[in-house]
Amino acid sequence: MRKIIVFLSLLSLIGVGYAIPISGCTTISQPGNYELTQNIVTTQSPCITITANQASLDCQAHKVTTTGISIGISGQQNTVKKCMTKGNIGIGLMNAKNNTIMDNALQESTYSIYSIKGENNTYFANALKHFRLLQEKNFSSIQNLIDYAYLDAGNGVSQYDLITKVKLCHNPLVYVQGSIIQSVEIGCD
Image: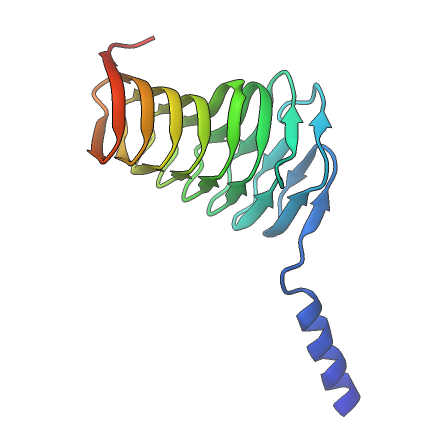
């Protein structure tokens, strides 16, 4: 009996901090920790799809290159960090809620982050070429370096961002604290 308890205790310790390796395009449909182990070049779009709730993807500074969407998220309470992307959309969110997108370098994608009808998503410490939020509710953008931000309706907060240009469409409500914004334009694309 004692040997069984010791064995079960050791098994529980093995799972602590374990990450599931990813080396190619995939769908993450289960909660857990995932790590990208190499760069990916593909025509598949999206390359990595996260439909799970409570999954964490650490790209470990690897790059996902595709002609479409590099990483697509539709789940809730997920984290995507340390990713680099190249293609049309770096990270695309569709009806995604309570996700954290942090420490990513997405300047090589046409749309670094493209979110449609998201809610309570946090964008923290990313380098972005084009940040596009459409009808995003209660977003938090914190300490991002953004070349161009397009906000269509929705509401949220920008704290300590450095933004070259913001375009506002359909009267989004954005609370700004400590951010530096070089120019603001009103109108829709």
